[in-house]
Length: 122
Image (cartoon, rainbow, N blue to C red; front, side):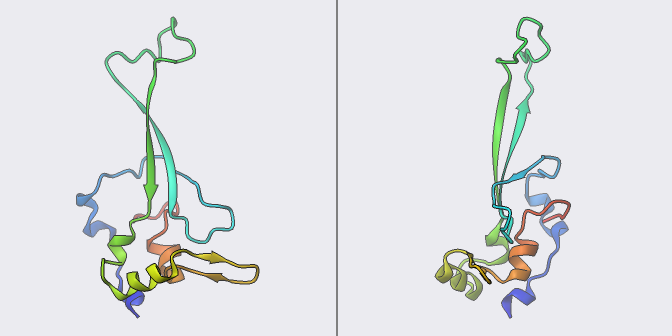
């Protein structure tokens, strides 16, 4: 029931977060995973001494990068101490069985608001 009462309003907290929607994020979850909640991205850093266009550095070995780890914000949807979080903690993980899946969080949340699926503001 608690999962049904969570409203999805990304505009409500957009100003409280760093906007990373322009990053190309690659999931590290498997092909059969229903809850896409982990990802990575790479940012090329620009600086005054950036030699990326320098012909004396053809392999761009002087270029600097920042690696980002993206993890779905479970705390936003299942606050500490909530019955929803306590139930998920008891399960510990989602289980993918041959004929069914036992999700750590309700499927409408783990595949919805808690997912890092593309083209959907969270």
